[in-house]
Amino acid sequence: MSSLNKSTVLAILMLSSLYHNYGVAFVVKTAALTSFRNCKITKSATCSPRYTLLQMSTAEGSSDRPSNRAPTLPQGEFRPKQSLGQNYLSDMNYIMKIVDSLADDSPDGSRVVEVGPGAGALTEQLARRYPEMTAVEIDQRSVELLKERLPGTRVVHSDCLQVNWPAFAALKGGRLSVIGNLPYHITSQILFTLADSHQFIRQAAVTMQWEVAERVCARPGSKDYGILSVVFQLYSKPKILFKIPPTVFYPQPKVASALLMVDFASKQAPKGVRRATLRKVLNTSFQQRRKMLRQSLKPLLKEIGGGFTLPEEWATKRPQQLTPEEFVELTKLLYGEEEDKIAEKAWRNAGHGV
Image (cartoon, rainbow, N blue to C red):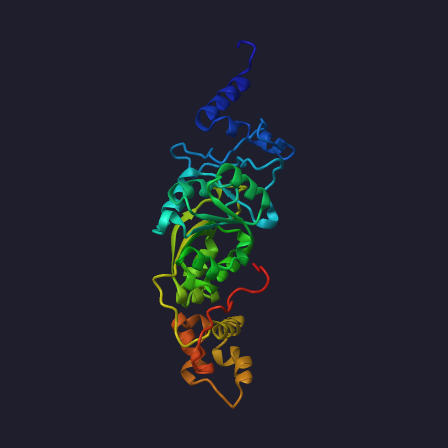
């Protein structure tokens, strides 16, 4: 010890403190993550960091602590796919808060559907409560992992944007309960896909970017108010349950997230309006959101023809001033009452979008 200088002693003490408080993974995190990219993952792999399906951060007060430990995936090099927007939850406190947000009373959870289970952080806990649940995953690596780790859980290899929700609900005998950590790059498209099948979905507890959740819940007159706000406030009762910090994901996103509860069952869908027609009115209106409706709706007025003009009480309003219900009234004013087509996919574009 006498040969060690003060700087070395201080460094050892600091490392000892870090080890005591955060464990080896924190101390060697940088080196481990650097070497991990070149490591082949097998059942007997000893490379660090090792993060299995059941190894979550459970230490008291760990919810906001950085967690850059990667899930163990099937054999082959592990790297979360940026193309799939993969950010895995790695904090048990938040995992349980998300699981607790869902209340489903179907037999053994047979109507519970998790979208994008990834490495199974939520799935493992959900399956304990809802043994008959279904997980829908597009990544073949994750499908193999989940089938190996949770053999009693039904895992479907599919794109969640292509799920036939009406047929799924019919198969399960009732409206579904959807839960999941949504990929950021297609969050809006997944939400619109659920809105297209709102009659077949009871509720959805989904994690997304904080700013998207704010847009869904935005009130008329606010800068965030737009098509997402109108659609989800017409067909559901959306509510932000809590904020989720970037530090509880691997890899860490650059923005905060939110758990959004979308309650479809408590909202009666508007009658006398076709969703495809309502979408046309919304898209045209919000393309020029700062202009009065007499200006922004000119393309539709020309399409309708017959010299139709907007009444003055509508013509001088701007789209962000209208409530969701007023957009329904406006659509009926322009096109008359129409019967909605249940099987029609009105909200989601053919492509995945953003």
